[in-house]
Structures are given as structure tokens and as C-alpha cells.
Length: 586
Image (cartoon, rainbow, N blue to C red; front, top):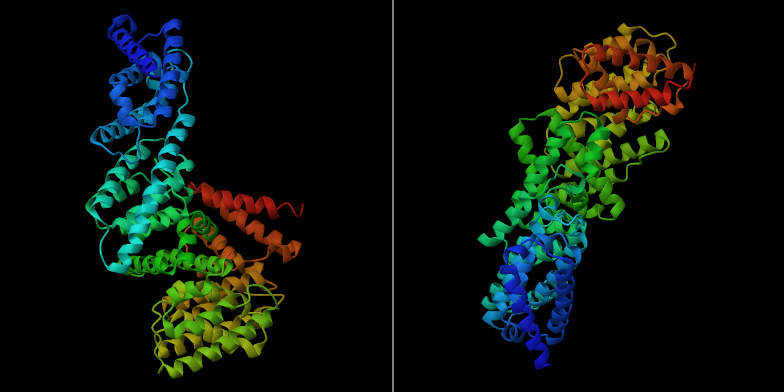
């Protein structure tokens, strides 16, 4: 064994002298490649058999200098076999738990070599020998080695310490804290220098868990959180962008521990939704992000996000577009919570305690089915609501019903023109409560106006011949009303136009009075939004009715195109609709 070590030492010295020779500086002839490959193979075998970094460094004092010069050689960087063999030797000098200053220096040096190698770009020097080199496999091996050897042990150790500390009320011991800090900072530096890959998601989750245990308020931990956040590109679906990518568990750990990251995510999602106009597009953006799932499964996180959204609405001064986006978010959160079996927790985070019964009743509102069955559910909910309000002295603390209950509001709009007359009072009561949950007197005023509007529209539903003035009268007689009431009347009129026997005959003339739009493009957007929100089933329409509607849509599209329509979303949505339904008749 001693003879083998001496032979290795002499070979290392011999090759070091060659690296000092200019003719070998950035060039490897075939014989040199074979010699170096053989040497690296023997060197790696020696290091793995020794299992003692300090002993290896003592017996082979030139090993670090040899490997360092080898990795810095341009020709070596272009030779995949030599480069990977050299890096395997480097990582063999990595000791997860260094027991001496020498081993600690070797550990730091190995990580520095790994980080340096991963930062190099393909265009720089990897094609020197026309071989090319892919670092994907090498990176996976080395990061995998780090994560399997270092993080689980550190996580287990911190977990054990945390259990002891919880019982005694003490903090994590200094030696464990110091070790965790040094190790995590090194690994984070390496990971942030690696090209983005989903393979490291579990590694990041372990890191974020350890950071959350150590104490998120520590400046160095805040710095790591800041670096992670800055490397994110939340605009991509599921936040998969930038240098690193996290899984859902990783995002939840990051968001709980570092609110600026959560705030940045919320603002980015809001910004994305502002760039689209249709409910389907907004839902696609929201469903494509982990935040929706995380909020529906974690009430504490949902509560924080809700506070952020309420602050946004306060600063926006009741911006209707923002309120609409937030309402869609709450709708999807509750729907996802219902499917995931976490609906009760979701409701407890959204609604005040005294509204739990109401929210539970509303959550059982039938999505599909017989109109009268749905209307009967509305009446029972209203009865419960009225009894509940009497017990509370008429005070309800839900500040904005349209944020939390917009989807149930739209369901009620869809059924109130078709249900039996005995259910009308219940429908108008529920609509008025959702629109104005805090003021009993305003509720009564809104209810009267909506009830009158519903009755007037119902009387026109089956008319074969319909005049524009008939519908305009319904709209204009309630001209002196609040914005929320006017919006509800607009939805009722649109539902009427979609469902009435002669609705298409007056559609084009009534639409501008409802939408208050000034351009054909705005009218087109209003139509598309209405048909999505009111879930119009065009499959149930007669060919004649469908043809009339397609002609109206096509007319607005042509007019908007002449006005330089610059909205791919609206153009594509309209085109798809016409391709689907405009071909059903000659």
C-alpha cells in the first residue's frame, strides 16, 4: 500500500511539472489523455478506499493542486471523460462532517470547484476538442451526492434538536446552528449557480424546512430568502422560471416564512390577470399557479393572502376590475377546497364565525340540475339568513359579499328568470344580501328594484314579437340606483337576451345600453364576458337563434378589426366560438 501511495505521489508531481510547460497548458495529446485517465481512475479508487480525507491529503499533498490545474485546463474542459473523472475525485475530498480544519478546508475547496464548474457556459470552452460536453448528468450526480449525504443528516439532526428545545424552551445549540449556517450557505450558492431543473425541488424543500426551523428572522436567512425570491419568475405557470424551481411544499414553506415572496407572487398574479379580459383567461392563470392550491389547503396561508387582497382593494378605492379578479380567485379557492376535502377549513378562513352556517349552506348550492330545485335551495338559505340576522340584531360583518359570493350571485341570476313565481322573493333577497351584506335598509331598497326588474323581464320572456323599448324601459326606470344594483340589472338583462324567445331580435340595440360601451370592441368584450359568466349553453339553442347570435358576434368582430383590434385573447376567443358554432348551418 505504501508503495502504491508513493507511486501516486510521484505521478502527481510529474503531471504537475507538465502543466507548467506551455506546450501542455491548454493541450492534451492522445498519450497524455490516456495517462491522465489511468491516473484519475487509480486516484479515485484510492480516495474511495481510504475514506479518510485528512490522511489522503497528508499522503498526497499535491492532489489539490493537481486537480485544480487539471480542471482549469481548457482541453480538459472539452474532454467529457477526463472532466467528469476529475470532478469525481474532487467530490471524494468532500466530507459532510469535517473533523479537522484540514478537512473543512477540503470541503470548502470541493464546493468551490463544483460551483465554478457549474457556472461555466457551453459557448465558452466546452467545444475545444469538438467533442462538446453536457453537464446535466454530472450536475445531477454531484448535487444528488450533496443532497443525499448532507441535507437529510442535517435535517434529522435539527429535527431532533428542535424536539428537545420545544420541551425545554431553549434555542438550537450554537454548534448545530453554526454547522447548519455554513453548510446551507455553501449548498445554496451551488444550487443558485446551476441551470434550472425540476430535479432539485426536493433539495430546495429540505433547505427551506431547515431555514424555517432555524429562525426566518435571522439576517443571513433573510438574505437566502431574498436570493431565492429574486431567482423566481412567477409569471411562468406554477412559478417555474428563473434559475430555480420549487414544488408546492417548497413554495408553502417560502411563503409562510418570507412574506415579501408571497406578496411578490400575489402582485405578479394580479398583474397577469390585468392583462386579460375574459373569466376563462383569468381562471386559467389562477389555476396555473400553486398559490391557488396552497390557499385552499392551508387556511393560515389563505388568511394572509386575504389580508393582502383586502389591502389592495382598499388602496384601489373599490376598483371594479380588481374586485372581479379577486372574486374569481375566491370562487376557485372554494371550489378546489371542496374537491380536495378541505372546504370546511377554507370557509373558516374566509368567513367570520357568525357566518359559518350561511357559508356552509351556500356551499351546498346545486351547481347543475332542475331550476326549481335550485330556487328552493335559495329560499331555504334566505330563511336561514333572515333568522340568523335577527339573532345578530341585523348586523353582519362580511364587508364585501361580491368578493366571496360572486359565483353564487351569478347562479341566482341564471335561475331567477325561469323558476316558479313562488321562489322570486327568495332569489331577490339573496341577491340583495350578497350585493349589500352590511346595511339592512340598503338591502331592502336593492331587493325591491331587483324584484321589479325580474318580474318585468319574466313577463317578456315568451313574447314572440319584442320591441326594443320594452327592454329599455326595464333598464331606464331604475336609472337612479347604485352601481352594484345597476350591475345586477345588467346581468339580468343579458340573461334575458340570451334566454328570451325574441331576445336576438333586440340584442344588438339593447346591448350598448347595458354595457355602456363606446366602441364595438368593448361591446364584443362585454358579450363574451356575459356568455362565460352566465354559462350560456349554446348547444340548447335553436339553429335560427344561434345563427342570429353568430351574426351579431361576427359583426362586432369585423367592426373591432377595422378599429385596429389589438387583443389576441379576444380575437382568438371570438374566432374559436365562430368556428365552433357558425358551421352548424349553411
